[in-house]
Each structure stands twice: as structure tokens, then as C-alpha cells.
Image (cartoon, rainbow, N blue to C red; front, side, top):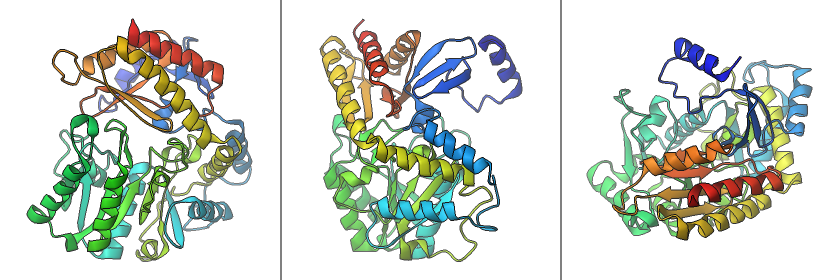
Length: 421
């Protein structure tokens, strides 16, 4: 069936609240390539919103799922457990940048992981308050909408939201927001909104995803750790988008000499299968009573099998190192295009978490219009890109880290032409 026919069916069958970016439909995918129902070929620099660091249908991931499919597909781990869940928890515990003994629980979605991290933090501290940051994205459920620092489209018409959630300012050098400014905003929260001894946790993305790939400065992370230690507050790193080699490390927090108390993960954990998790200090993770954590599909065995394969692929194919190399090549192309593209305001990079921000060169104001034009130019040449940022004026590049070199070079050529013509 043609894309145009499927679009008509979609409009009739599904609600407008499920926003759909592309007007074409996936037929097949392999590594960094998509084919639509009209037979067109697309280079995928969206990767299911950072889900496919190991690419579409990596052979080892497919084989792991097929093998598990022959055994069983579901028992509900908290009813009849299975060894693969325990083994995956052991692997994550050993790999995650958590101080001391760690424990891991698995769930299904990133938002679900964040919700459970909040539950664990409140159970451990016996405090209600949560502090997060403007521009952050933590999910679409009610608690995670309250935590998310971007109104449109995530919060419009859905309030009121859960209380005891407060937003600080996230540092952003391009926008003139320093670490000192950000830390002062937390001091104002303590003065005006909630006493620090009532705050359970501070939660942040080490690199803001939806907010525009804003990288947290090292002194900001250190300041948060010191603040948390002073007041008995837990530090939660939301690594849903940054995890599993995207930033050049397995987790973005490994770029810092600071360790969080809890860390959430999802997206590329299971190579396209729905799986998320919370890892943290063992004594913190043990705070909820038996039955307080879980979910019918939490830690699905097919997804767990895929996650084991993903960890193998990251190690065997040196994807952390490759993320750094690919990110460097992309950044070189963006910097080369910058003198010819006056709209480029900032280029932000950590490993293969790369973004470019566009402002109107006349007014200095954010330009979502130019961002869409750039996106459309690239799409006409067969390259799929995603936008982000509070003002919708940032393009983020989320190619699979397994993309073949020749295809990556082709994509870089498209990016350069789209910026300079």
C-alpha cells in the first residue's frame, strides 16, 4: 500500500495527539537504512529517537530475540522469575557509575523508569520534594510531565500535575547561563519554595535531550553532588537518551568524577525492544517494600535477551570509541559549514551526541523556521533528521553507531550541502 493511502487511513483511525513527523511509512530497515512502502531509501539519523545505537536489526540482537522466542515470551518476572533478568542486572550493576554495591530493577519505558526512580528516592529519604531543570525531558506520564521543563507540546491541556516539583535553571553557555546562575536558582528554590530537608532528589539529564543537547558542565555536576551531600538529597541521573555509548562512554555520567545515587536508562538498552531500568546504590534501591516495584511487562524476557546482545555488541564493536570518532567527523563538517551558514549559532557535542542550533542572523532570535527548512532539504536528499530544543531551533544527529563509513560520509555530504546552499 502506498504512503498516501496509509496517511488517509491513519488520519481516520488514530488521534491527532499522537503526532507523526514523517508522511511515509516504514517497510523494512537494516542498520542505518530505512525503506518506505513506496520503495524509497532513507538514511536514518533519528534511530527511533536514540533507540538504535546498535542499528536496525543488528544480527546479534535478532538472534538473541529469536533464541528467547523459542523458550518463553512472558511469565511476569515477579511471578515466575528467570535467570536472564538477574544476569542483566548483574552486568548493569558492574558497569554503571554507582558508588559501592549497586542493584538494578527493570521496567518497560523511560518514563516508567523515571517514575520508579522517584518512588525509590521518596521511599529512601521519606521526603516529598523533587528538583529538576528547565529544558529537561523526563516523559509523558503525569509525574514525568511535572518533571519535564518544556510546555509545548508535552504539557498543554493536561494539568494539574503532581506537586512538590520545582524547576531550577540548567547551565547553557550559548544562552549566557553559567554554572553559578544555575546553582543560585537552586538556592532560590530553597529560600522561596521548599526547604532542602524536604527534598528527596535532584534529577537531571547529564546532556539534555529534548532540550537541545545541552551538556552539563563538570563544575555544575560537582556542585549538585556537593549540595546533595550537604542536605541528604539523592542525585538522579536520567540517562534514558544519553546511555549505551551515545556520548563516547557507556553512560554520560562517566565523563564526570561524580557518581549519582540513582540512574535511569531505556532507549538503546535493548536495541529497539521496550526495556528500561533503574540502577542505584543497593541500600537506596532496597528502600521500597516487596511489591512496591514491578509491572506486568517489566523486564520482558525478549527485551532482556536483546539487551544482553546490545551490551555484547557495544563491547565487541568498540562503539564507545566509534561514537567519539563519528562525532568528531560530524563536528568538523558542521564547523566547515559555519562560515557559509550565518544561521548557525552553536554546535554542541559529546561523543556522538551532536546538535546544531540556529538563530536568525538579523534578529538573533531562535529560528524554528530555518531549522525546518534545513530538515526538509536533507529529507529531499534522503536523510532523516530530528529537531529539538525549547524553541524548536536545534537539529540533533542520532545515527546508529554501527553506520557503515561510506554511508556516514554520504550523510555528511548531504548535511554540508543542506547548510551551504
